[in-house]
Length: 121
Length: 113
Image 1 (tube, rainbow over the protein chains, first blue to last red):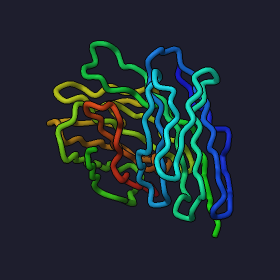
Image 2 (cartoon, each protein chain N blue to C red):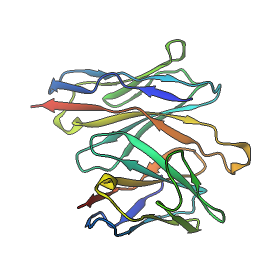
Image 3 (cartoon, helix red, strand yellow):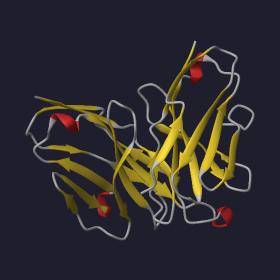
Image 4 (cartoon, rainbow over the protein chains, first blue to last red):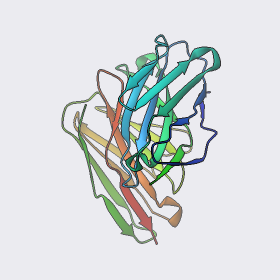
């Protein structure tokens, strides 16, 4: 069974600090996708990044960066120079392949429990 | 990425009643999904809404409680039937197209008294 563990329930930092959110996953699939989503207080879920299991290159997008380590089954997310607007719950998610006859190439997502990040001014 | 809207954005309902939540996508998508997020918890997949066939429900969720419709490639509804306070949650729909990335609607905050 798929499993995503976000061991950090809550993190509190002061603005401009760097912060890393941890994500560890378990899967028997050889092909899978990993995701990060942000859920601000308003409640909507905002897609941040998708990474496939064959691409272990780290990625940087502005103040955000992601470190994918297949050897340790981890997909960690770092925010550099955090800002108050970064305050949100962040979810890591893992996809699994659906049954061959289910149609299309769409995947079921398994979410971690989320990490509440509070950035204080 | 697809833009997804949901109606209603929030509602307060009495126990024993039913509520139908609508999800509209601005483009045709292969699959749509319905999730529940109980207070302070993560997201749990309720079912996958398949166009032209019955929805596929996850363990712990049944059609009688959460009937789903998918009349076309841009629209789906989820009904929460015979509600109890335990059904108080945020209900989110999502869709995925050719990229397999799921994009989410803004959610429906349901409170059952």
